[in-house]
Amino acid sequence: MSEWIEIGDLEDVPRRGARCVGVPGLRLAVFRTQQDQVFAIENRCPHRGGPLSEGIVHGASVTCPLHNWAFDLETGRAQGADAGEVRTFAVRIVAGRIQLALGELMRVAAE
Image (cartoon, rainbow, N blue to C red):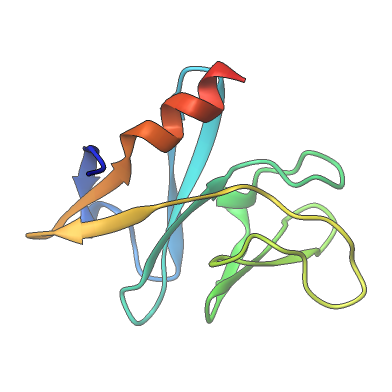
C-alpha cells in the first residue's frame, strides 16, 4: 500500500494554473485543469530548463514559457514534433486535499 503526503488544498491551485512544490533534490509543478484534474510533473523543461509551472495550461497539457514545447500532463511526453519528456508523479485528491505518493518522491530524490 502506498503512503501519501498532503501538500495543500485543491483550491490552492487555480484552475488552468500551477503551484510549485519543493522536495529535497527536486522541484515539482502541480497543475489543475479547468475540469479539476490534478497532475504533478517535474518543473523543468528538458529543452532549456524552463519553469513549466509558469507555462500555459490548455486541456491536459502545459506549454513551456521559454520555447513553446507542449507536454502532456498525464504522460510527461512532449507533443508534436518535439522530442523529450518530464517525469510525472502520482497525485490524488482526498476530501479536497492534494496528495502525492511519498515512496515515488523518495525514490526520485535519492537518485
